Amino acid sequence: MTVLGQLLIKSGLVTSRQVEAALRRQEQLGGRLGTCLLELGAITERQLDAALARQLGLPAAQVEDLREVPEEIHSLLPANLAISCEAVPFRVRDDQVDIAILEIKNRGLHDELAFVIGKWIHVHIANEIRILEALERYYGKACTLRYRTLIDRLDRDRSTQPDASFGIEDTIENIPFPDLETQELTPRRGPKLIYPPVPVTRRSIEVSAEERQALKKTAAGRPKPVEMPAPQLPTQPQPEPPAATEPSPAADSRSEGATVEQHPSAPWAADNVQQIGETLLGKLGRHFTRVALFRVGKEGVRGWMGSGEGMDLERVSAYRAGLEEVASFSSLLSGGNLFVGRLARTPSHDELMSLLGSDASTECLLSVVSVEERVVAIAYGDCARAGMDTLNFGAVQQLTHKAGDAMRDLILRMKRKRA
Image (tube, rainbow, N blue to C red):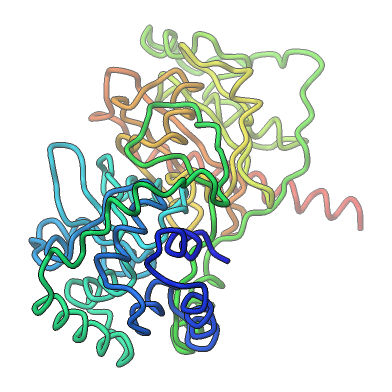
């Protein structure tokens, strides 16, 4: 029995037989349990919204909220992302956006939406029917006949039933909710967000056969991470080659705290991946105050090396994150090559900026290092408070491209030796 089903039964709004009938309908036709209960006439729409709000501890978006969204607000999300995430922004207040999401428990999805919108998000629940109606209204995703029929019926019910008939919120509030099958979670580090800490789950999205085929084609074309050989730390410091020109005082200040060779004229040819990473770090150090490299493998993103003022090198090397856990990394791994700007305020970004010695007000650059279109590393750089108005982005991307070429050449040499 689902948590929602238990909650509705304990409140006396439905019987166990009605919930079982709705579950059978859900197995046959799909959709959410609440949608199936609405179709069976077991509960009203407002009763369902009150139960969802109580179950998840979040406010509910009203029908009127989702039907009167100005274009400048719903356009904060691109149509393809709104449809795939089943999310609709409907109100803006200062630096906060109220957004209705169907998949409330997917924390990684929340981070992704906040990253794209560029503001803090205040998550609201909404039932499946009203989310689908809003996606059709603002983003062009047509409702099926099944859902369109239910929407029309719910609208007629709302126009004929007085508000007093929906007065069940107190009943829901008085249910001993902790007795249900819920899980106590330890809050993650970082600032307290408007949405509560919840486990990460995969989205469940209804798609047609044609949409599924299109998604497979899109996924096939995305860069896939490859696992590079484990880096071997050199036992002795590498000698510094002579400088071609005298470095400027500003460049010297940016190199403070580095633990690896940082000369910009260092050659790309290397005997191992570690040396290539050190060379890239040194060359990026000529452009940034703080630089860091993260390795990308099948198991996720791992801290590799870094240098710069205020950076916690031990935490950088110990850093671990899933491939989809950090929105900025996930965006790059999904086909992007470069990100420039301030990272959205999310727990994963706050943790990342903390170990790098920066904060949410810092402009930064993220660029991928690829081998044969497969992302193997991500480079980070920032200029502290100076900003990046004068940064040569093309030169930085050229460095990451050369690092990828050097890694490719190293892999080919290793294969030839084994042959």
